[in-house]
Length: 526
Image 1 (cartoon, rainbow, N blue to C red):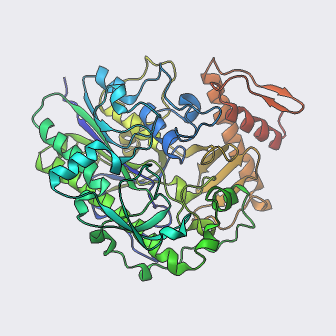
Image 2 (spheres, rainbow, N blue to C red):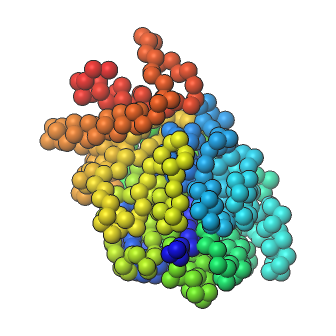
Image 3 (spheres, rainbow, N blue to C red):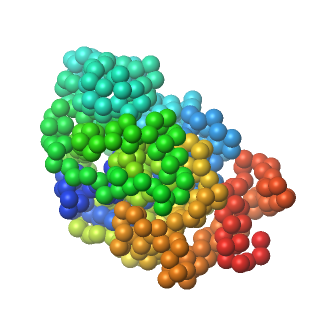
């Protein structure tokens, strides 16, 4: 039997990537990401299937879109029609790999349930329930004892929601993981106390133990960073000079030509208008600089794992993937903060690199549109695992096949349900350099990303695009109808004059809503 590869996936959290990474106006790059990419394939148009932590991670863990696994929003939000734990009969990637003979590990952020962790699903390693209060947990405090470091403090330079915290130093031992979430500053003390290094070191310790084992293994290393709050260690903060960062192209956008959902995130969810709180770019320069430095520190943690694979002689026989759960809307579209309630490129695009010397030629750049679902398919494909025993098929394709040309992908459809139940459902289609966003309850959007990568000009009312719009709406209709046919247990919609009746959280009402709107737009019977 042919030897099966080991599988290591690093999942960063909430990465400022689209519009920020490798731009002419400011050359921000992750050296370790670039190093691994030079040894494998860089997927230039990679996206989260939905740009919020829990649904994105749940899709990665199951290989299925959110309409199937049911986690549409973060698990800590008690929103109707949102699953807060996986169904009892849900099957995760690791169960398929275990059936194929793999030893499976998971270290770091979980955020796919309020009570359960990765270990409840048969994964060895370490994680915390929900978002995870890392700096206050026992395992982290034990780590501090091991490395002989005190509980760290951070200097908060700017805080969006509580300006009284700006300029203060606080102990990083919060009662809740989001106590200092909306801030930026510097983590004081040794770089080793940073959460990214903590998780990377756990993974490296485990790799040391696995180096001589005959049984193939999989390992997911899930970082908490560079998600805000942006508190990089001084070593990394010093690498980014705030005054060198030019104003972000859509920073001062007034949103008058944008659908209202953009204002939901900027004006309502944060309770204060970010642009009014920090109206000048000079403040945002420091915030963005700390964000970039947090990214560099995450990359340094990635580098530790890449180095460990090299020094242990595992690199040649390991499928090594570096990705993220979603992007970051920092400073974009009217001085945004956090994720958006719309699928802006800054929120949807992710870095994605795959290295596997046995099957991927070094230095490839792949232009096909792909998503985090394809990472799951790659793990199962490389490991010789199949998902045929599960009643719902997986939704991704093997990235190794896409890189080699065996699978051709010319379009991609993503989903969005808003950040926290605050917005209508969206279908996002990428095709031929264009992006069409179909929305129930708000206006649609159309952008030519080749000419307008920062989405400053919505072409929806441009007559020259009407034929293209009709074509793209037709593609979304085909997608929804194909998925309806795929599941016998999807219930037929019940329409009545005042709206739509929902009889169960288990059937995808968002698919029906989109289909109703799209068929109406196309002049088709509903």
